[in-house]
Image (cartoon, rainbow, N blue to C red; front, side, top):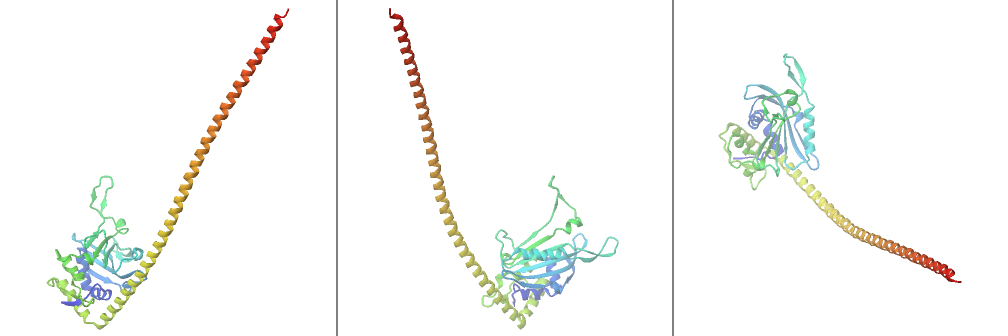
Length: 331
């Protein structure tokens, strides 16, 4: 079936504006039942800034856990086509950590509190070190000394940390093994039309009710002239991004070439300095050796002089004694 390509931001946004589809999709990703979902219009944004293009959604959700526990959480979903400056994602996350919402406390009184956060990242590029299509970065409480995993939850900790989900659309499995993979196959690039990037010839399993809803909505999207025009605009933005990145790569390559040249000059200078230092040290050693030899010669000369003086003194003493003997022999 021919449908709009959901990798486009305008199509992805159109798909999730159907709250029921968004609720079921998030339930499938989280593996927990999302009972109700609210998406604030002002919290849905698309940003393009130099080297980054991000589609962002913030949902308030009421989740029913397998244990039957009901909790209210903030789900932050971000989608990026290209490799990004991670600081932009961190800034969004920081914004959500500052938000509060009205919840009922233990006494049933409404009060403002921060909500636990779950983050979901749809990535149109690949992460080299992660080969799986879908990854959950999960928290656990562990006793550092005994290494025992503690089966507990503490509100203080829950509000300061969060779970994350990474979905790499280019690494999604070609054949689905469970409901999650069946649903996410609709985002897989393997069905993209060769002749028209705006279209996907989806051949996945449409027996799943959620997949069927998504396919039907994306079928309506491909028939919308307004959406197709916006997809053309996205194509142009992507081309501008690629041109700018190409320019940046050229600039970086030139800078690296200049740096390499300067490093070569510095290395040559360092080599000359080392050789000069080596020569200076050798000259110093020779000078010290000559000094020691001169001192040794001086010492030997002084010793010779001392011996000569002692011999002279002996000779003088002998001459004196001879003179004394001569005097004694005279009548």
